[in-house]
Structure formats: structure tokens, C-alpha cells
Image 1 (cartoon, rainbow, N blue to C red):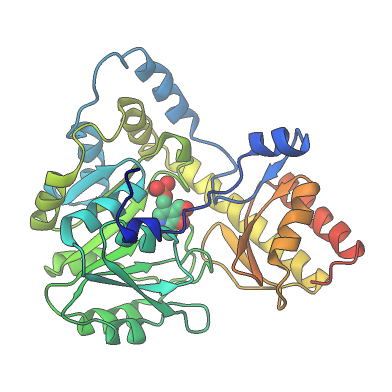
Image 2 (image 1 turned 60 degrees about the vertical axis):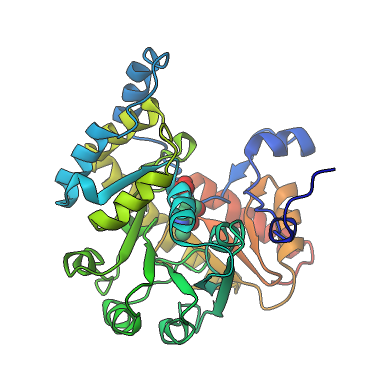
Length: 363
Ligand SMILES: Cc1ncc(COP(=O)(O)O)c(C=O)c1O
């Protein structure tokens, strides 16, 4: 039987958040609340839905592989040239493209832990090695990460805000870090949740692009824009980096429907504002309720809350909440990540938490 190389065999597969349909199949729970994958609970912009409808009639044709109109819209919005943009089947694909473009077997990438679980998977899939640097006080320890850079390092991943902690690194910390990163190393800053950030100290990473640094900024339509199911994200970098990445990109990687929806979503600022203020409301509610229940958590700059259990009961809590029809995400053994939902969903979560605690699970 054909066997993949050892570096593929040793990959621990990504476990996605459980879809609502699976809960229906497995436990017969029909009206599950999914707070597991940091999606926008408001849904997509109605303008994006309309764009999907009108694009549907044209799906006999391949999409525009260059994503011209979407890049045009993005380039206006971001004030960057189209040649500085690359679009992907989710920002996840841009991570893969960056790794395949700049890394090969034996190379190293530095990343935080816990952070977005796809970084080590992408790196390992090309036979390279992920160097995992523990967070410090739940934030990326950028000093320690810079110290891990060697002549084998090609890429450093910084999720800002970080998933699963929802924390950010400040402009000052990031600047100090960039001064420590040598030439020849690509800094990938993953800003999937940037629209949710309220902290005024959040770095403007475009500054480093303007300064000619090798940085790749990742953004997505999956979070605040509510298009996770369509799979579309993009990267911003300098022309040279984008040109190389374009060689690796599959020619028709982003569907015509996704492109049309993304263009429409970009034009609906009001939907983004509504989504962010709903998130703020939900955040305040959950902070107050978690405090009342005596459950530890981190303040978040994203659309999810990192809940610290203090004991290795994450999978037990996950299982008990599943039985209550609420899907969350365990992180390691003693923490869970909960996406901020609609007010009603947040309320159902809190009620379920209460029942689980009354049932004897000490949180
Ligand atoms: C930090 C981070 N980056 C990237 C992604 C991938 O998003 P997508 O591929 O849907 O754009 C996620 C999704 O959860 C994420 O949390």
C-alpha cells in the first residue's frame, strides 16, 4: 500500500467545530446553538446574499482567476495596488500558499502556542518544522519568538488578535519585534478578527509594507463579513512576494460566487458596524454572566471568549454542553473557546452552563 512520508503520517488532523447537522444526527438535537467556529451569528450582508443569487446563473463559467473586480474593490478600500493582493479559498489557503512558496523540507517556522492550529499543520505538510513558542500571559511572546529565529527560519506566524485567546499584541510590541526580525524571514500577520478590535493600541501593519518589509497580512471574509461558508480571504504584501505566491496559487481557487459576495459585502459598512456592535453587546453580557457564575475568562478583542477552567475538565464541559444543545470548542484540557452569538444564543449558553454546574461539574 502506498504510504505518505513520515512528516505527513505524523500530522494530527485538524478537528473542525462540530456542525449543527452533526448534533442533529448524533444526539437528535434539532435546534443546537453553534458557538464553536467564530462565525458571524448575524449572517451575511443581505447585499452579499443578493450578489450570490445573481452570480448563481453564471456558474457554468470558470471564475475570473485573477479576481480583478474584487482586487479592484479591495485596492480602493485599502489604498494598495492590485499587484499587492492575493485572494484565496479562505485565508487558510493563503497560509498554505505562503508555506508552499517559501518553505521546504528542513526549514522552520516560528509560531505561538496556543494559536491558530492550522499553522503547524501547513508547515508540517511540506516537511518543515514548526517551532512553537508558549504565549506569555496569554499573548504572543514576541521577544521569545524573535529569539527562536535561526538561519533555518523562513516564516513567523503572528495571529493578532490571537485565536484561541482573543488577545492582541500592541503596536509598540510589534514594532520592537519587527526590528528583531532579520531580512529573509517572512512575517505572516493573521488579522482574521481585526474588525472586532476595540483596543486603540492595535498595530497598523500596513505601515511595515509601506516601509518595504517582508510582511504578509492575512484578512478574511469569514468572520465579520459572515461569508465563512463561501471560503474567501486575501493576503496583502509587497509585489515581489505576491508574484512568487501567485505561481503556486491554483488558477481558479476562488469561486465566482464567492468573489461576487465579497465585493457586495465590502460595500455594506452598515452590516459590519451592526455585527461589531452586536459582538460588543454579547461580550458585555457574557463577561457579566461568567463573572456571576465565578468562571474565569480573558477579555477579548475578537468575537469569542477564552474561558479558563482551572482544572482538566474541558472535554467534560464540552460533552455536557453538547447534550444541552450548545456547541463550544475545547482548547487543550483546561480551557474552552466560546464564540459570542446572538443575544438569545448567549442566554441559552449561560442557562446551559448553569445547569451543567448545578449538575455537579465544578467550573
Ligand atoms: C486566526 C485565524 N486565521 C485564519 C482563519 C481561517 O479563516 P478562513 O480560512 O475562513 O479565512 C481562522 C478561522 O477560524 C482563524 O481563527
